[in-house]
Length: 149
Ligand code: CA2
Image (cartoon, rainbow, N blue to C red; front, top):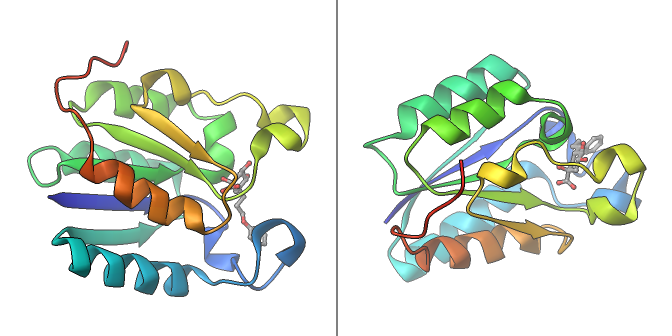
């Protein structure tokens, strides 16, 4: 099982600002935690971050044939990006949407996810543990489940 973890804009700042919302764990620390867990369950992971919408789109396109599942924290692009939605819809891969914070308990503009309808499922609001849950969920993906794209 090969899982691609993608992180969107500003997630490189995790642990440095807004700890009341996002906690004090940095992105490299999340990656280390996921790597440790992945080794235990025999999964292979790649873990990336970009502030560029086009780079995230390219990575989703290139994932086909190389990975089994994509775990995506699209950050602010969740709420704005038709390009990401189209890339997810075009890939045949299951994409799991992840958020650290409970976006539904925050500002109204965060309540809408443009990518949710084309994702396999969502994991939201468990802090950095959302990533661990996404790894567990990836191991249990049913490839024949139809996502209405
Ligand atoms: O809760 C999440 O995981 C989010 O995807 C995080 C995004 C936000 O736009 C989404 O609505 C929910 C923000 C990521 C930026 O993270 C920062 C971390 C520290 C300081 C500033 C931003």
